[in-house]
Length: 244
Ligand SMILES: [Fe+2]
Image 1 (tube, rainbow, N blue to C red):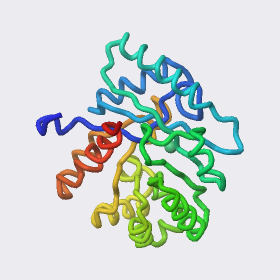
Image 2: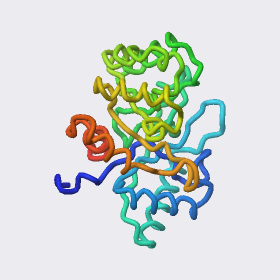
Image 3: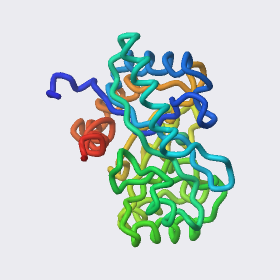
């Protein structure tokens, strides 16, 4: 892709696969989400269905089948978006065993794993857990870092996590202020320090939690170093989807 296509973006956190989690409920909604994403200039998306140890989770094989069906339907409808597969894992003690056994999917088969915690989890638990993941040879991407109270209350903790090798993801609605002023301010502190590695939509449907991207990108590119903003909306995620 060339520089002139700078509005072309990659969404690395999205729940568009039909009927696998609390995201899209059926193929029609999935297609509506993809259509919306394409209109937003998103040209590649990594599906990140929730994986929770205590829940019944769809197997990687079934997810592969599901994404193949979505690709086919999108093609039939003339929607040009490339689709990749991963998981968003709710942290649990046996995460490494499950990753090693390929029962949980990394992002597009790379060493990167999208991991979430409960919003009220304490910082020590989050830090030590992520430390264990990096020690096991994976690169954890902390999903929507703005959601954890212990980090929201002390944004410098993000710096500590980054020094441990953790990558940081924030959600578009949080940057735009839809989750409140405190969260927006927190996101801007992180952006000012260039501590964010990825911006994702974390879209769940085509009505409320939709895949919006472009307005946020255009706003930020005027306020921050454009080459940094390009990296977090596009460049860093592109490395994941181009990895074989
Ligand atoms: Fe998510």
